Image 1 (cartoon, rainbow, N blue to C red):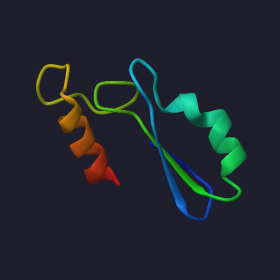
Image 2 (cartoon, rainbow, N blue to C red):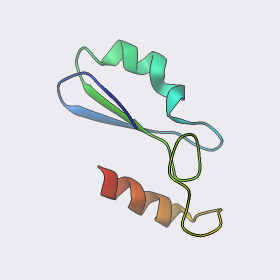
Image 3 (cartoon, one colour):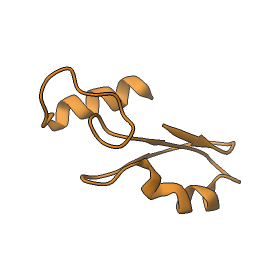
Image 4 (cartoon, helix red, strand yellow):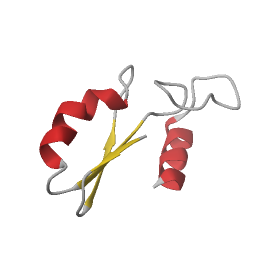
Amino acid sequence: YLEAGHGPAMVFLHGWPFQKQTFQPLIRQLRHDFRCIAFDLIDIGASRPATRPPPLKFREQARAVREAV
């Protein structure tokens, strides 16, 4: 994940087929007022591989993000 800034937390989640780096320009603008956190979803970008073959269901991705937050 990427993390930058201070203040109230703002979490960024990308859609398929993007990755956390998609948000870098936005994070550069917001990091002065917010703690910005951008995740890579499982099996995308620099994330850890899935424990079972993809594609993962939406609920499984949501559970992983919830655990990370």
